[in-house]
Every structure is written in C-alpha cells, then in structure tokens.
Amino acid sequence: MSIKTVSRVTSPRAPHFVGDGFRVHNFIPGTSTMQEMDPFIMLDYNSKYSFEPREIPRGVGVHPHKGFETVTIAYKGKVEHADSTGSGGVIHEGDVQWMTAARGILHKEFHEKEWSRKGGEFQMVQLWVNLPARHKSGEPKYQNLSNDRMTKVSLPDNGGEIEVIAGEFNGQRGPASTFSPIHLFNAKLKKGATAEFSFPAEYTTAILMIEGSVRINDAVTVSQDHFALFNRDGATFSLTAPEDATVLILSGQPIKEPIAAHGPFVMNTREELIQAFDDFNQGKFGHLED
Image (cartoon, rainbow, N blue to C red; front, side):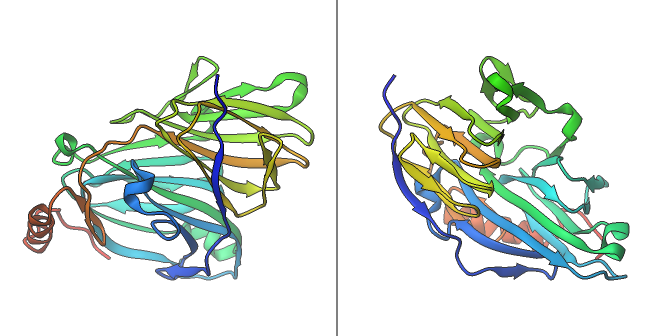
C-alpha cells in the first residue's frame, strides 16, 4: 500500500478557558479549517493542568448544541454532566462520552463534585463530529462508553495496545456507533514499539500527542501536546515510540456538505442557522436548570 505522508505538525496555540473549568488549546478550527478537517469540526485539547481544590465545581453552565456530535475523552480528572432530556452522569478517567446533539439539546458540564474537592491534574479532549444533513434533525442521544467497554488490541512483543473507541483496527471494532465512517483510537505504545495503521487515502486523518512523543514513518517527530495532519496521498503510516506514548488517532470520511457554523450550532445553510437560533430562543431545546 502507498504511504500516507504528513502535511504539517502544529504546536499548541495559547490556551484559553471554556467556562472556568476547561483550559484548552484549540486545534480545529484554530490551526485547520472545518472544511479541511471534515467531518471533524472542532478539537479542543485540555492539556495537563492542575486545578486547586474547590468546594463549588468549576465548569460550563447551561449551553445549547445542534447539528453535530460532541465526543469527550477523559485522560485525567472527572466530569459530571446533565442535559435537557434528563440524561446525565459522570465521565471517569479512561471513559468516553459520545453525545449526539442532532435537532437540539441543552447541556452543562462541571468537574465532578468529589474530584473538585480534592483537585488535581486534569486532561481531556473534546472533539466535535459533524452530522450529515439528513441526521441533523434526529433525536438527541448519548453513548456512555466506559473504559471497560473499549475494544483493546494488544500489539506484538508487549508493545502496548490500541484502544478502539470507534471504527476498526486489525479487524476488531470499537463500541461507538457513528453516522458516517469514523475511526477513533487511543494508541498506548511502549518505548521502542511500532504500530502500523491504514485508512483510505481520501479520509481526513490526524493525530494528537497526549503523552510522550512518536516518529511518523520513522521520519517526522511529533512531541507531546502537538497535532499532526496527514496528506490525502496514501493509506498506510507507522508510529514509533522513542518513549512510552499515548496518541489520539482520528480518521474519517469527509461528508462533503456545506458547513454553516456559528457558536454551538453547525448546519448546512445560513437559513438553517437562523432557524436554529429561533428554535433555541423559543425554548424548543427543552429546559435545564443552571
């Protein structure tokens, strides 16, 4: 198979706070456009950050979403959430929460109460995945993907494992269901290990370096907290870990539909955006106490 080469490696931009509980570097659309990264339309990365103990949890109050999915991946810390459908829960370390906002939902998320009282290191990713137009008016739903549900594929020679959240690695599928073809993995590589990956050339493929560093195709080094985007010129690439490493790998088939985005709404046309704001203002997303 042909080799997938690297388009660019991006260092983290200056962080900013979302609410008072999430200190994030924005990679999508910050250093790459939504159109270029289709179907991935936002990636906020809360790199390791130590929060002081606090009795009143930090976080983000009630806010709407419509037209896409949010994927929250917890590496360190715990998040408690609730929404206008009556759903809620806690995202623990190692867990993933996959929320389909679809036709509209109100949501809030805070540091989990007991974790907040103790404080500590916090590290998470929130990825937004666009929905095809035909699914933007569907019912909201959740996939609560606890770590014990993840598909874990061991690498040869005790080289670590690939944790499959969505899609498929070496014939083994992850637990998440998606509305368009998407692969989402945590590659946990031991020092000296090499893992090979293959995705269709036309897929949007990238990695985010969560811990340690890797060399792509034994040529390009990606350091901790950096983001690497691949060209659409081949299928296969390798990651070699000069030290123990954790890498978030994302690859998805572009939806190739118009994107009209403003704040928490991602639609296909300006008219649909206006309707989304009208629906929100008229209370059609339900009710949720702050």
